[in-house]
Image 1 (tube, helix red, strand yellow):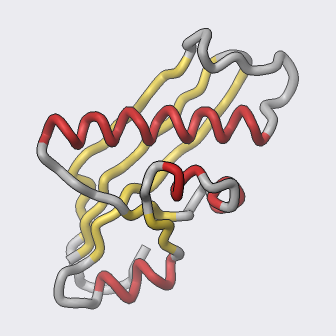
Image 2 (cartoon, rainbow, N blue to C red):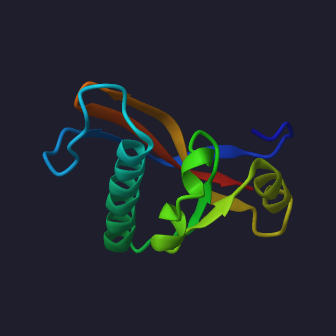
Amino acid sequence: MIGSKRSFSAAVLLTIFLTSSNLVMSQSLPSDEDRIDVVRAVLEAELARQATAFETVRQLSTENIALLISTGVAAGLKLTPLSLTEITEKAYSFTGAHYLRFKSFKIEDRRSVVTLSLVSEV
């Protein structure tokens, strides 16, 4: 987070519990492929929500999912990954920073609990 007097607001907080049979996860520790499937499903749900709300946020913070970004999930969904440095630069720009951020990401057994935030720093 940026240490300044700029306002920080989470406009949307989307928590998804995924237990769908479409996301079949192994009984052992979740693999990177399991995590990628969860990230993709959450982002697809958020983009569908944005489409019905006439919103467009196409930037994604790499925080908490940095290792998964290299898989091309963001690019496949036409999202631009942003590092903390890039977010800081955008926050101080004229338009500010508007991006999606995985606030929490937990997979246990066959259940995923994920919190995705729509963040605006202006």
